[in-house]
Length: 173
Image (cartoon, rainbow, N blue to C red; front, side):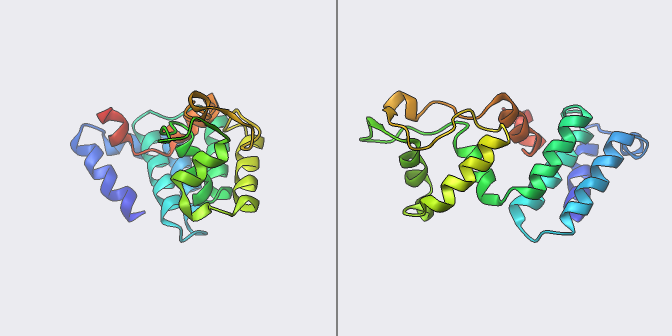
């Protein structure tokens, strides 16, 4: 809550009226939802995602209520690893010397802590796919170099990433 308060002060300096937010039912609901989730985690990545979600509601950069509900549920249920994998596959970097292979090679190159841990990252990917956040079912299909660098997040995945991104960073782009 302190982090949200600090960021709200920054938003007020940029013209967001805090008095208006205090009367905004959507914002109040988002704060309550985020607060309940924040009480049940110590993970910094999730706390930052919650802070950013609330701030995106505050500045009017949030989806409708149904999507917000799904997005808050995913912040709560997905691990920081899920969030990092999702962000990686929104814009995978090219792999020097890799002209063919599976998406698992992109994952292991960019997240070396997962090398040899297929049982973990396959489950993470399955969770992302079953939630509709990525558009490719399997990490182990051989594809070309261009295929390895193609965006794998779905429209829903992109919207979720935008919801948990710092609105100041989005404004800077």
